[in-house]
Length: 379
Image (cartoon, rainbow, N blue to C red; front, side):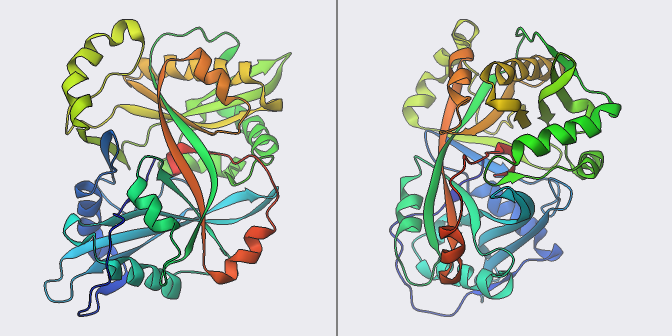
């Protein structure tokens, strides 16, 4: 799950205006470098990278744009921010939903507020469509306190970050689990999968939309194909599904370091992993062999159905050579406690925010109170 790399003690710095503009193909290498060199902080430092190309969509119909900031004299790239738009269920209706992510500032410039101010102003001026995407969803790692203090503060020159919901991402060791009732999907199951996704995801706030056409096109755009789905049937009727989404060809999570205390204990933690059941802690520079347990849709939010689907997904993940299964749920999702109970996992907490300028406030105030849907592979 993506976060934000900024610091709280930023100051306005007088000087030449930065070169902030919409990024293009010529900026691809610098955008990838900024992601690689500015990992997410916390007890574990992780860089969410996009190799070998930055501008590669994760799903059909995704609009992916970015702002890049450069020092005017040297041309050095020192900051970036991504804007994405995808169809989503908002109050039960299909509408475009904006996402802000990949906010990165080079360590040498993190105390200069002008970078943040000019970057947001460029996004607002050149990319923002208030009539279409009046607000944006974003996620910040909960223990990134510096970023949260800064972005939640009422500071001129930046949009409002309104806390929306807390969510938990579980990293679970892949392995052999009891997966009774689950079967692998076939190509002919796509219409039934699309119907299951529509009736269940439509109940949540901000769930991504996956039509039958999207599901058929997904393998050509980095998404899972029909045979990546696992199904749960009851009396012949499909009542739940989940998919294995391997994003490693498009986006990678690379370990860049640990809190010193965790780093010292890492060999012991890994040595005892066989009997604790907890995922191993990879070494620095290692890309995680992870797969997202995505497209989770369960009739009536039945926790036992989701537990069985996750178990089957973890079993299949190991068969495919993966070491981790990743799934995210809002803390208010009634199925989350069942996953905590059924699986030993490492839990990563994040806070979802709705980001808006003044004209987006009214649209936010009209939102219905629904449980948010968290697709960890899209945040």
